[in-house]
Image 1 (cartoon, helix red, strand yellow):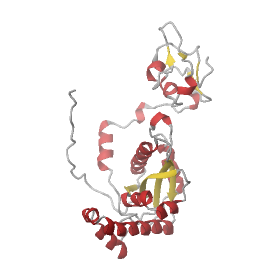
Image 2 (tube, helix red, strand yellow):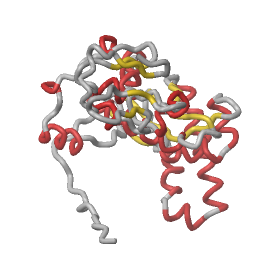
Image 3 (cartoon, one colour):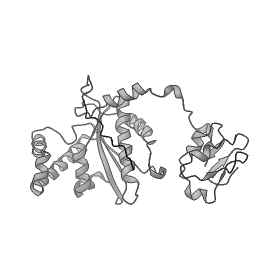
Image 4 (tube, one colour):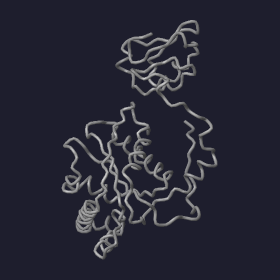
Length: 278
């Protein structure tokens, strides 16, 4: 039943109110337990197509657009990691800055990005797009452009350059040490539309998910702040990416097979927590 994006199978529906509670925009209403759920007027305008109702219904009574419950993989609670496993996973994730001279399989990258597409985004816009660079010459060229920008900063903003020890990074590059892209075999840049308000945060979330997913695949990852700085502020570096006129990068990451493996978890500062009393 229903003519909007969500359809209800009344034979399966148990009128338990789950769909009305889980809907993030509250377009599903059920006046009483005797009534079946229904959509509000203009539900198609407000529906985010997120699938929350479809995923949460215990009875498989909801269809979203052309997607039926049978089309969706079932959640297996037995596959969920334990609290101890989650803690170990997060504490053993470390930035990788030394990579093997071994390319990352494009099939593995596609599998990673297939997982990462489930990262949350505002209004379920899913605006993150991915640029994968795995040609050594292209990676070297981007690193070289970034070093040019760092040289400019040492002249234009000497105090900032000194605080970041940019001279050390520049000297390293000139002596064959890549502290920009870490001589990684693969770079991944997340980008999206300049005109979409949800893009910056959504892209940051997606890139963070990529880093964690890479750890689960046995790959190493490292956020590339200098490179991101360059493609965000340096016209020729941005042009080298070949993005569209309305497209802007929102983060860069190195990926590859770690050359080294860490044996223990180093200390970190305690979390700073303030409980709001207002």
